[in-house]
Length: 348
View 1: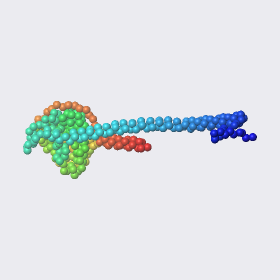
View 2 (view 1 turned 180 degrees about the vertical axis):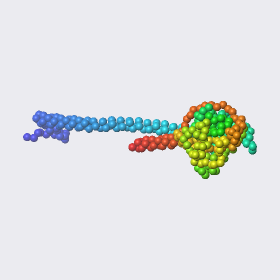
View 3 (view 1 turned 135 degrees about the horizontal axis):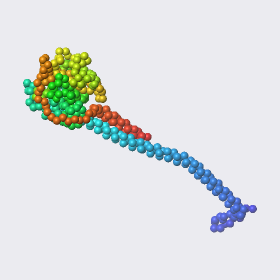
View 4 (view 1 turned 90 degrees about the vertical axis):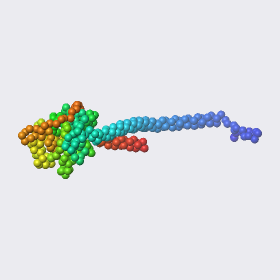
């Protein structure tokens, strides 16, 4: 029979349940709770298993990001260093060419009257003369040191300069009484110092630039250019000023040679420069010093000497010319490339 229902105050009473029904309901609830708890445990275990690889991936990503940040900082530091080096190289290059084209030296050039007499000798200490080649940038004092490295990297004022000075071979007499004298100078761009000497290897150019002058002591002498050649820096006939045989070698090996200008009595002035940095090849041009103090007479006697330009001579350090402009370009290019790489990584 069905359970009895009680009514009161228009509210339905809770139906009557037996102990067996209550026990059955309790067991059903317990079973449901057990299943729910078991399902929760299983889901929890599944989640924990799923989280294990996620944690590993996250750690790997953190390591990669950390390395990426370090790489970015290293690149930025390298870019800054390269930029600073490039800036220094650029400033140093400007400094070199400023010294090579320093027109203030012309203030020390002696005045010469119509008879070739010098009123006041060069007042630069260590100067032994002044060289000028017509229609070129070659218009500099000639220095001389105790050895051939003294003015290699020192300007006529005595200051350090990679463009150096024009200087007379240390083995030559400072008053130019030798029959063969050699002047050296760096090969600078824009025809500064002896940079213009390579132009003399062209026959047309040589033909149009065959005159010049050299001031020795209290007199100016005319120069007549007669030959140009290329040779090794160890060619004794050319670079050993006491060796002899220079004129014979010039006649046999010069790419450009004018007959009838120089003979065994002539005083010859050689002017030499390197063809490239760190190269043994030299470009040398030759001129006769007309009536110079080292000119011989047919009887074998020598012209009288002139008063030399006095001054203290200092020694210096030898160093080669470095072409910094290329390093500047490389540094700027590396800086730009590094900057682009950093930007690309940040976008990713």
